[in-house]
Image (tube, rainbow, N blue to C red; front, side, top):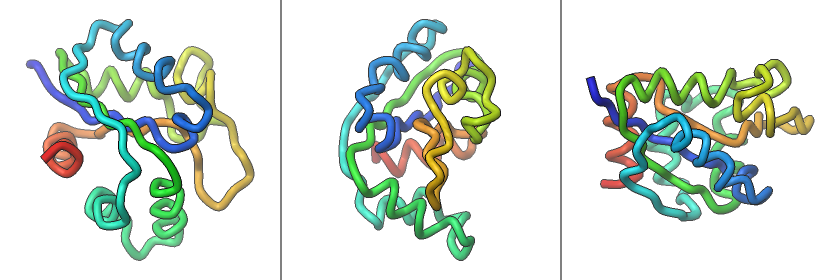
Amino acid sequence: MTERTLILVKPDGTERSLTGQVLSRFEAKGYTLVELKMLTPSAELLAEHYAEHEGKPFYQPLIDFMSSGSVVAAVFEGERVIEGARTIMGPSDPTVAPAGTIRGDLGRDWGEDVQKNLVHGSDSPESAQREIGIWFG
C-alpha cells in the first residue's frame, strides 16, 4: 500500500548544510519526493505538531530549538515509506544510532537540553496524515 510520510530536516541539519544529504537518502531508497518547502516554523505551528508532548519537561526546549532556524519540510511517498523512512533515520538517540543511518552517520550528542538529531519522520499513517496537514495545509 502506498503511503505518505512527513520528513523534517531540523534546524541542526539545515545549519550544518546537511539538507541535501538527508533528503537524498530517501530518494536513493526509491521514495518519491512529492512536496518540499523551507521555513522557520512559528511557535503555534510547532505547538500543534508537538501537542502530545505538551507539559513534558523537554517540550519547551524542543519548541525553542525547532523555532531557532530553518526547517525543511518534505513529503515522501512509496510502499511502506513510513517504516522505511524510520529505518533510514535510525533511533532518536544519535549516540546509539547505527552506522548507515542518518542519525548514526551525521548526528551526535551535543550535551544540550534538547536532543538535536537532525531529522523527524512520522511514526504511523495517522501521524503522517495529521502532520502533513499541519505543515502543508
